[in-house]
Image (cartoon, rainbow, N blue to C red):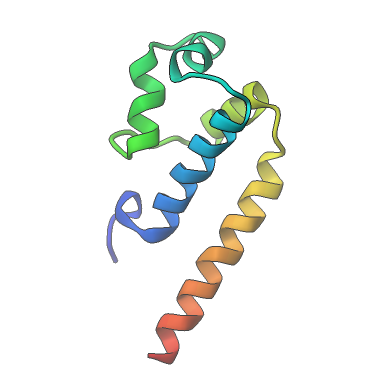
Length: 89
């Protein structure tokens, strides 16, 4: 099994986080400030250099004002579709 940070699902997860931030019109610097972290913290998890644990994910979701469970549900559906497609091949 590949390390999760290199999977299509984790790439999609990072994309969701970046898009949620951009939808709010927020820069990485502004979000980092709300999180009490340096700008590199946001940059690194958006590029996959750093992983977020579930508690950190909830904090990012809270600062960006989105439902983390709803986003994970959509991510799971993406993952499940990819997995089902790969089984058929």
